[in-house]
Amino acid sequence: MAAAAAVPGALGTLQAGRARLVAAYCAGIGPGWRLPGSWTGLLVGPAIWARGWTPAAGGEAWRRGYSSEVKTEDELRVRYLEEENRGIAVLGINRAYAKNSLSKSLVKMLSKAVDALKSDKKVRTIIVRSEVPGVFCAGADLKERVKMNPSEVGPFVSKLRAVINEIANLPVPTIAAIDGLALGGGLELALACDIRVAASSAKMGLVETKLAIIPGGGGTQRLPRAIGMSLAKELIFSARVLDGQEAKAVGLISHVLEQNQEGDAAYRKALDLAREFLPQGPVAIRVAKLAINQGMEVDLVTGLAIEEACYAQTVPTKDRLEGLLAFKEKRPPRYKGE
Image 1 (cartoon, helix red, strand yellow):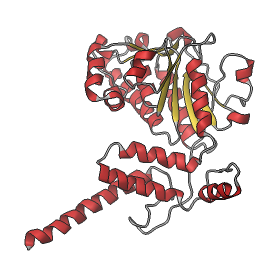
Image 2 (image 1 turned 30 degrees about the vertical axis):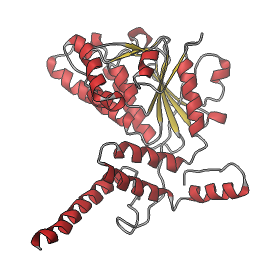
Image 3 (image 1 turned 45 degrees about the horizontal axis):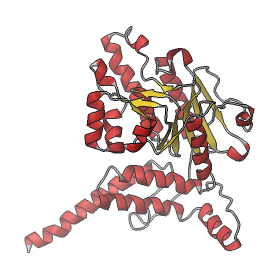
Image 4 (image 1 turned 135 degrees about the horizontal axis):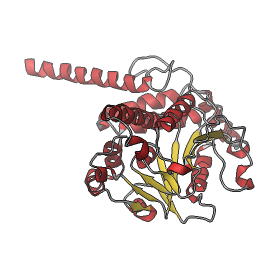
């Protein structure tokens, strides 16, 4: 009898623990969010979602539709698209002389840009790309690194890891457009994005073991989650570099394209994908990303509870009612993220 009585108590403790875990995850949705009735009996608050910018890509036809530049530092060009691309934001890295390597100043600029994106309500998808032909990001700035004291290296890597984590935690979809070299921290930057597309001529790899160090920007954690533990170990242990076709074959990227004359085939594909996301409900996109990201880190039962909590965030929204009305009236919905 005592053992039988203990089972419900243990189950109750487990359920309470899961409820706290789900509550912690849903806190990431933003102020005013609460769990659904089966967890707390409270309805949810209004949605909060993000906005950003974008950079131009080869030719006048591709420059049309851009607003004024929001951020003017030469090494990081941050703009947002207009007209039919309104809602797409692009972060363009532009350190040609250093192959877009991640210096202290660039990391600081990325952090400021990403911090602004978190609270920008007009952008629905973010593309991370290079504005330097033939290179996405060559990793850490080794010329700067060699001048650092050993005591400076750890804090710098911590800052780099933090900004990459901030990119991973952006609430809207992120796409890495890899049109060239993506090594070390450059690939870690791409791994932090939700979707990766690359040109067949691109080169990708976590090559840190060649320098007698290991990936420090999340690579040892995100690469196994992307392609599996055994293959990730093989690639990191060998410091192997893959081309676009090989990266597609192992699941590192979602799409591979032949490079075009302008050198921006991956960026153009990223734009196509972003345009597919634009018509969908922005609140739904945000909570779907949260449900997937957090659910992948827990057991299935807890993951389903997270899904339930996230689904509940969409129920009281104006967008959900607009979707039903648009279906009834046989017209495209006009979502506002509310």
